[in-house]
Length: 388
Image (cartoon, rainbow, N blue to C red):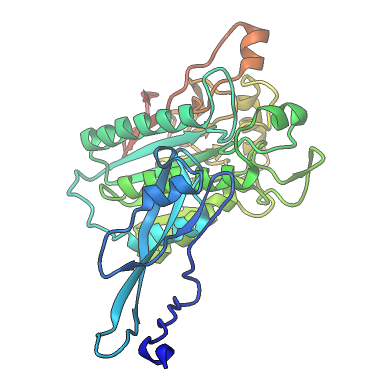
């Protein structure tokens, strides 16, 4: 019979999960390309274009996944190998998700800190990024560019000062959040969802920490703040540590532990909004930290500190107090230490996209920047700071 002269073509069945497809949301997704014979290169750009996605507007995340399987052919032909590629992609400048962060962490390898002159600690005030906020300086693109430029200047400062340790202070308001005082305004202007804000803020801090830890061990401090507070209908809910900034610190601690980086993490006690660190462990430099929303005006911070000391709160013994919240640099000499020298209050600048509300009402505009200063073992701090 004629039909006996033709052998049916073998059925090609790809492994489960490797059927050609594109799955995506507004920011990224996953594409599984059709199988190709042998090791022929996959046309990722062409496949995405056919699916209505512009390859110039996206970037591939991580390493592509490759699957290879054999397909039988009629005797006497040998089986042939088929190869399919699966890629994850995201729109450029989109927020990074936490699963990706963990994959990045696993690829990170700790490196031995460089040789330094002993006796110096560099204090870095990572303050008021308000990730997700759109204002007169722009949105997420402007923030990413600003942080990248600032990080480069920070690395240069580390190379010049050669500290034996770095204290990285998340002074608060790392994300913009929703449901603060101007909650309806935030709904209209924020360019990132809450989840994206947290992911991106975590990513920015993580990338910076990875660069800094190559030079010296790091102590990471975080405190609660008004924009990061857990809120429902604008009302604060839960304890003082129910806070997105502190949550980010805990996530970074897990990432750091994953790869064994030389970073230690501290946060306030559950009912506290401030903390203190004995920088060299000798009681000489005690660094106190609070976000600053505890006072209505910056002039209220010194009085708040005095009252805290009177009540023997966390910053009682602080010789230097750092705060954020008010978005402009201020250095003020206050009171005296137990050895009769001056205490100082350092209010940090902001890294955010600006405050149009403040600019229009006051006529002033705080300039963004990253405030840093050096503490030296058994040498009194005299108020010198760097604004990067």
